[in-house]
Amino acid sequence: MKINFIDGGVCAAKGYKAGGVHCGIRKNRSKRDLALIVSEVRASAAAVYTLNLVKGAPLYVTKENISDGFAQAVICNSGNANTCNADGIYIAEKMCDLVEEHAGISAKDVIVASTGVIGQPLPIEPIQKGMKALCADLSVSSDNASEAIMTTDTNKKEVAVSFMLGGRECRIGGIAKGSGMIHPNMATMLVFLTTDAAIRPNLLKSALKEVTNDTFNMISVDGDTSTNDMVSILANGKAGNEEITEKNSDYRNFKKALFEVMARLSKMIAADGEGATKLLECRVTGAKTVKAAKTAAKSVICSSLFKAAMFGADANWGRVLCALGYSGADIDVTKVGVEFASGAGCIEVCRMGAGIDFSEEEAKKVLSCSEIVINISLGDGKRSATAWGCDLTYDYVKINGDYRT
Image (cartoon, rainbow, N blue to C red):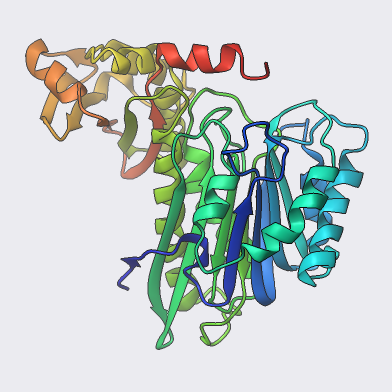
């Protein structure tokens, strides 16, 4: 199946509009802080949520609203997480009520999300005042919506693809936000996906969970699992394909297209980690099991010592072996091989669990690029996995030292 990357983000699929405005949650009037995505018709819906025991109120409301497998709109604010607030559920429900009042979509068909500072009261008044302008901003461009969900992100994250199902062109698009508190468990920060493919809710949920495990659950910026992590998807069937009702070839092709969107967004989030200067991609091959491969790859990506070495373009491969050793993965460290690769070339630094002679000068060139691949061969089997992360810089501490104040 051929998959083409296209423009349009969350509005690339048929039957969707999005908008974003500044309503006053953020003090900086130049930053949009309220987003809305709507489908022309009620759509199959699914979501995955953080496993953090402390959860934002919007997650509880969203879970209830899509318990029947359907939704038609998404509303999201930035600047305040609506977490650990006594009136959090009320505020989240009120946001859904405002969508019904101004967009004519049932409050029970709304996915609601919030992101920003934890433990600060979220006033409903700015959102109430901003709804008219927000609905007026709805268009087939996702630019304003993708900007409105950003917090410490330095750039917007939008992806879309087209592909064929049963002779019909289908599309999947998405927007995401995420820069800090990225160490997901069932989701990551906030991601909103849309598709015009027709697929039953139970299969949509299955596809989302399966692909999440290979994408968003394989990234890390700082080891912190957020309280508000959520990935949601709407499927409105506007493409006109025969509805996917079983795990057949159409289902598998849908999953492949969904993977391309979610993997690209995962890399964008990792590359935009707070203070980051480099995207790190760890590819593990030769593992006994997929679990071992994933565990090993994620351990390397999460190592603060290794991340700091990558910031300094230091080929300290010992930190890779160290991370593998404490990962808990079932591996034989005497078989491990490591090489670093980038646009500047590829250099082998470890073979059979031991160091080999290599040019430090050449390694410096390889590791000075903005995207670095860490290839790890375990020599134990045929399973593989990929994880994404970023380097650890001085700016990460600067950003988070005064995040709230």
